[in-house]
Length: 76
Image (cartoon, rainbow, N blue to C red; front, side, top):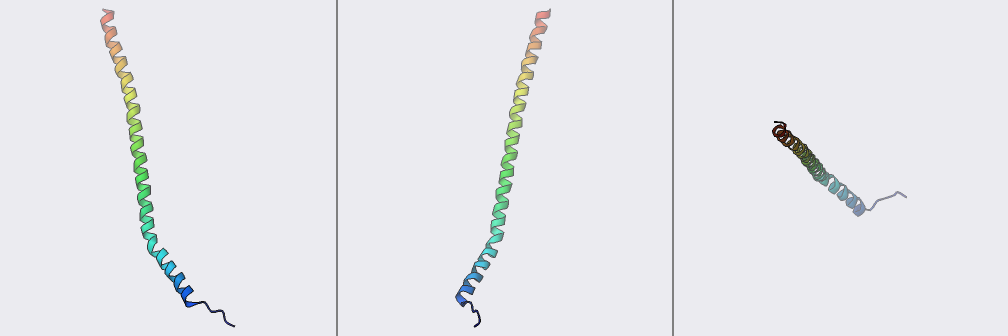
């Protein structure tokens, strides 16, 4: 007795395979967009952090410069 597979089962499996293969490119592009937007978000976060750190350094430099200018007036 030969094992025969129902034609409806074969058709359902074939349609599922075609659906998966057809959706793969769209899912890959969506994944690529997600990765790219995440990388760009991290880049912006790094830029903001660097800017805040530079602002702290700038504040310290301005404070020290003001102190040195005020010391010039006291030394005379």
